[in-house]
Image 1 (tube, rainbow, N blue to C red):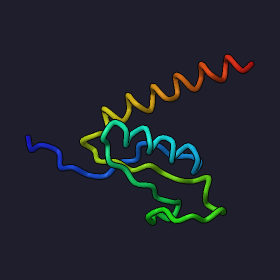
Image 2 (image 1 turned 90 degrees about the horizontal axis):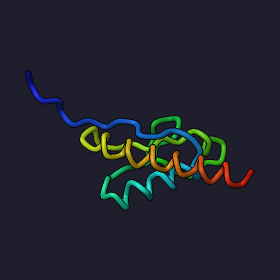
Image 3 (image 1 turned 90 degrees about the vertical axis):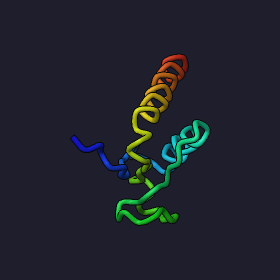
Length: 84
């Protein structure tokens, strides 16, 4: 069986603010990423599409990125519960 070729995968989709936060967490873990808008263009600020932003990464980094993103959501949920 041939090894899978590296390709780009979506790690997260959501608001611009949260996409940039996720991108920063990935960068801290030395995972390269970039943002794209709903038109699949490299992200440029446009308020009308700021809610539909994707964080794209290499398929080679998906396992590590999934752990980081899941950890973010776990801690976010704990903080939300503490605020209530």
